Amino acid sequence: METKTKKFMIIGLVVAITIAILAPFLASSNPDGFESAAEKILNPGIEEAELYESPMPDYIIPSLGEDPISGSVAIVIGVIVVFILAYGIGYLIKNKKK
Image (cartoon, rainbow, N blue to C red; front, side, top):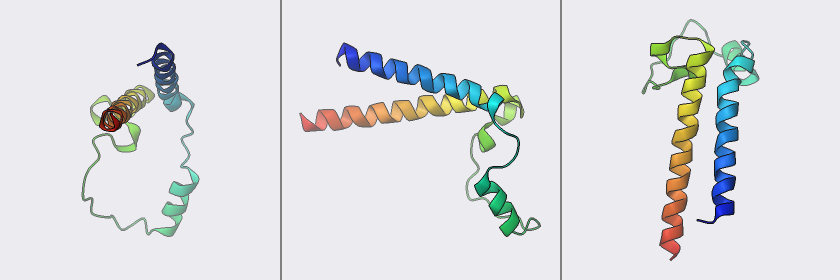
């Protein structure tokens, strides 16, 4: 991998992790437009059966509680997982072309 490409990836990862750490502290507690519309349209008395429970529902880690630090940790984990998946897929595609 070229030095320029490696530096670009590292800077991008640092920026993404910085945003992930700050996002829960800057986020509004009000629901977004999509969530607000869903609450108005769907009957709040009816609960849907979940097929699969998310390991980090609502961008928090349940064992850490519902505070912004829990949200930061959950988002940083998500950023790292997506980075590893994207890097791995790129690596496989690059090697397949050779």
